[in-house]
Length: 187
Ligand code: HEM
Image (tube, rainbow, N blue to C red; front, side, top):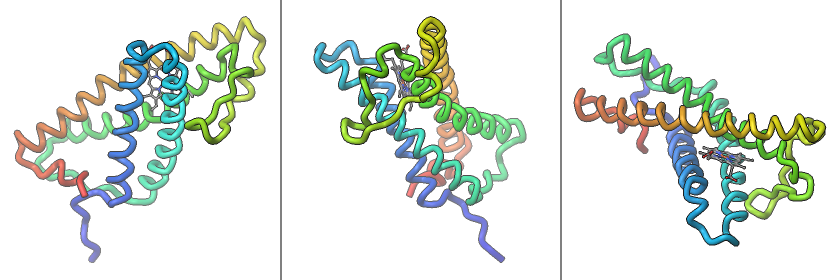
């Protein structure tokens, strides 16, 4: 009989921590952008975009991995409500990992100067904007630029809340319930 794993696969663990680190770095970068000298602001925003697109790529790999590799079962001591809350938080986090970079990319594609400021991933690889958004007539595009920007900001607010719950939940299981919770997601 195959053993039921008690921790995530190495690939899932790597993707979890790389994506978490990149998202945290991206949020810190953009929320502190005004502290940088003027000539740094454009490169910092460009790096924010590059990191975000990298996250989008990694999340697609992660979802494919998740669809083909079963995660370890949750410890039997967790109640029904707790299981539901954990699964719901994971679901929302997956949605946000897609919605944040996608709304950022849409916001940036609706930018009126997008055509004259081509995007490059980390200043190295040319990266496209979303063509159908760039092609919209200017007044509507300006409206969409604001709307996608607001969506991007609000997705960030939701992320802060769910991220806090996710971390608190993991710490509760580890230190109050005495489960080997963190070991499931550590190499
Ligand atoms: C991991 C993915 C991403 C996260 C977590 C993220 C998060 C954020 C946050 C928290 C803000 C500040 C919003 C505010 O305070 O109003 C922001 C701003 C912004 N983001 Fe993102 N973002 C991501 C990906 C992207 C991508 C892929 C793009 C574009 C290709 C992008 C473009 C922008 C732009 C243009 C701004 C406004 C910057 C400015 O003040 O000029 N973001 N992002």
